[in-house]
Every structure is written in C-alpha cells, then in structure tokens.
Image (tube, rainbow, N blue to C red; front, side, top):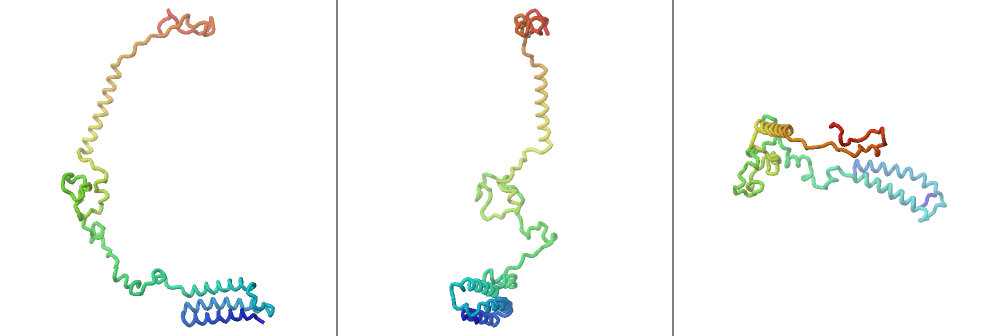
Length: 231
C-alpha cells in the first residue's frame, strides 16, 4: 500500500502536467514530458515504501524537497521566453526587428567613388592647425582658438592646439647645413686648442740615496736620486 502523501503528490504533479500541455503548447509539452519522466521514475520508488511507510513528515521531508526542486526546474524551463522578450519584455511594436529597422535604419554604405574621404559624407572644414591661427583674435575659446559651434575636422586630435608643435621657421636642407657647420666649427676649435695649448712644466722626482736601504739594500732596484740622467 502506497502512503497517502505520495499518492497526493503524484496526483498534483499529473494535474500540473495536464495544465502545462493545455496552456503552453509546444514548450509546455516538452516540459511536460520532462515532468512525466520524473514522475514515472519516482513511482517504483514510492511503491517500495510499503504499508509501513505511513505518514511520517520527518522522514519524508528530504525526499519531498528533492522532488519539488526537480519539478520546479522543469516548470521554469517551460516558462522560458524568446531572447528578445527576456531582455526587456517590451511589446512587439517596440521590440520587433522590422519595426526597429524601419525606425532606425542602417547607415547607407557608400563606395569609395561616392565617398572619397570614406567618412560617411562628413564635410570637413579647412585643414589648418590651430597653432597657425591668430592668437590675439577674439576667439570664443582663446586657448583652442575656436569659435562656438564651429565644426571640427575629423583629424582634430592631430590639428588641435595640444597636438605636436610644427616648426616652420626652417626646412630640412638649411637645418642640416646649420648642424654641420656647428659640428665643424666645434671640432676645428678643439683641434687648434689641442695643438697650441702648452704642457704643464714638470720635473722628475728625486729621492735621497734612491731609497736604496728602503727598497732592499745594495743590489736592489733603487729609485731616482740626485745626479741621475734625465729619463
């Protein structure tokens, strides 16, 4: 004899399965099959309980928790919605792809002939670095030398006032000539000074008796003493 508690649980699970199949359609049927498999596997176990396993809440609690968790997971799987609905739960007139494409169409892709700059048809102002603008003019932004609402160039990061400064006071040829002239003059002056700078007056050092006793006595190599020839 199967306990009344188990029979009651099976009856409620079967009622939930029937409700899923009636209201959820294909997704409900798929989830219902999962629930049915769980129930069919649980029935042999419940039949093994016998007549001795009467209503005993403390012993049945762990089994009921496990079975309820499995049933809850199956029910959650049946309630899954499409991705676009799970993201925002917006009505179709706001979340449908056709409506979105109609309201916010993609930017037309132009060829290189139609768009030479390949910048989406943006009209750039003249390519002039800010450093070449008059620093004493009445600019709206004196630091950037720019007026309010003035369009910026697409390469503004390379043309702004904080971009690398461009030196225009000389060109490459004259610059190389000036650097070469400096090196030649420096080396020439150094050579003339080296050839004409007088040496420091120096005399060979002499020691008393050539430090013969200090260096080991007669026969030892002694130091220079007075009267020796100049080296």
